[in-house]
Image (cartoon, rainbow over all chains, first blue to last red; front, side, top):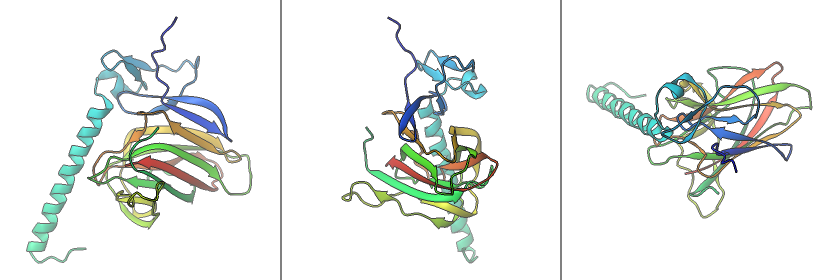
Length: 98
Length: 154
């Protein structure tokens, strides 16, 4: 029996009828329609044990989606901290805030 | 089955093609990690054979909204959504991250389209007030009004 390595990540319904399934890239989180025999080159990460969307950045480096999201959140916190600092600095100078 | 507090946000817009002006903007907050597990898309305009292509893309700034929608909790006992905003239009557009498509789909204006995530395959937005997901119109020869309903957990 063949074990299916690709994990179905979503279902598509058109006019109430299920017409397809989506797979999800373990590196960027992108979903795509599963089309067997389409010839589209995707990929597989042996470390994450999951399918890849085929984008270059997903193929060349193993960075799981959870790690990417953590980095994005950390960046967002840093941006927000700097924005607050700027607002406080401008307020201290007496510059009216928008 | 999605767990956590579940919410529904819906809006409508004309699907004019643009890489910078989104049709829907969902922006997270520092205290939540929204996970989108379902959406519906369809047109309420007069039926016509027009193809359309949409894409959910990530964004790294919140932008300034000019029209927002208040999401509804699916469980009336749940508190209001903690999203920074569920936007219909912006006066200052959010910054859409290049090559960050989370899902693209095509549909005919006559049909309605629904996507449902399998458990643990939801599209996650990070816990940052600048992180978001934007619905962008990628292709449409003759734009029409479309309506969307998006469901997520927080």
